[in-house]
Length: 390
Image 1 (tube, rainbow, N blue to C red):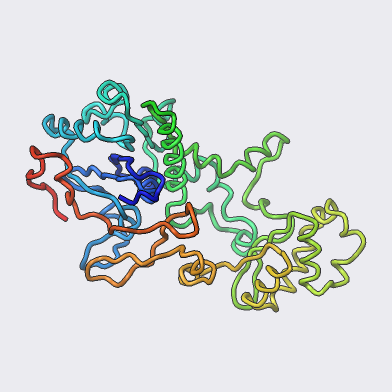
Image 2: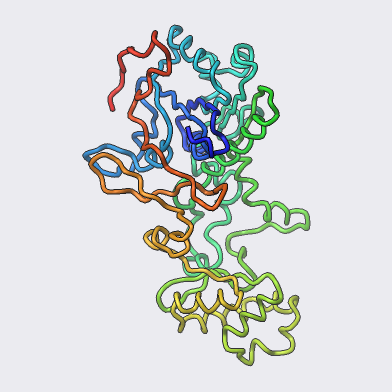
C-alpha cells in the first residue's frame, strides 16, 4: 500500500466485462485504491480482446492497459455458495463497479436492492451503455453505438479530413474513446459518492458521458444551428498540412492572431485593415485558411511548432504513436513508464492522465494472472480449483 496516494486504504470490487467499467477501476487503482477484479470461470472477456501483444503469450494489449495494478479472483456468481463468498468480499469494500446487464443482475445478487440491503455502506457504481434507468436501460451498446448515439460520431470526419475525403462516411475515433469517457465519468461519480460518506447507487450512462463531449454542438441548438461534419470546423486554423506532417492551429484570442501574423512574416493580406476586426476574420475564414495552408505547405513541422510556441501561437504537432511515446514533453513529465511482462519487451504505458505532485504516479504491478489473489476470499475459497484457462 502506497500511503502517498489519495485512495490508499480504499478497496474497490470490479465486476467488469467492458472497457468503461474496467477503465473506471484502472483510474481508481492509479490513485492508490486496491482494485479486485472478480472474474467468472470463463475469465474477463477483455483478456481475449484483440490485438494480442504477442500471439504466443496470449496477452491482450487492451487488458494489459486496463488490468495494471489490479488483483484477480475467480467466482461463479450464478452459484449460491460463491455468491456468499462474493458478499463477504463486498462487506470489506468501499466501492463496487459493475457493468453486468440489468437482466442478469438479480441472478448474480447484483441488483440494486439486493446490494443495498446487504451492504448499505457500499457505493454501488453501475456503468452501462444507456444507464440503469429509462427506456433504453436494457439496450446493448458498444463503442460505436455510444459514440454515434451521443452525437460526436455524426460530426466526423470534419475540418481538413472532410476536405480531403469528402465522400467518407461517419467514422469511429481510434481506440475506445467513448467507453473511456464513460469510465472517467464513472470514476469521478464513484468518488463523489464515496466522499459523501454514505452508501448509494450511482447510475452512469456511457451515452450521457459522451453527450458532454459534444457540448458545443448541443449548445448551438439554442440558436437554431445544427452542426454537420461537412461544415463543422474552425473558422480558420484547425488541422494544417506541412511539408513533413500536420499541425493543429487554433487562435481564439486577439493576441494569438497577432502572433500568428508575426509567425507568417506579416504578409500584406494578414495586415490588411479589414482583418483587424475578429468578426470580419470569422466571416472570411475560408479565404484566410487558403492563405495559411499555402504558407504552411512550405514549412517543416518541428521548426514551425518551435517558432509558433515561442511566440505564443497555440500550435502543436500531430504525433505518430512513436512520437507520442518519445516526445520531449512526455519524457520530461514522465507520462509513460515501462510495463514489464513475462517474456515480452518492455511496454511503454501511460502511468495515469493526472498526478498529485511533481512525480508521475507509479505503475507497481502488471495485470494479474487469473485468480492470482484467490486468498482474498478467505480459507473457504482460497483453495477452490480455478475453472478457467489462462
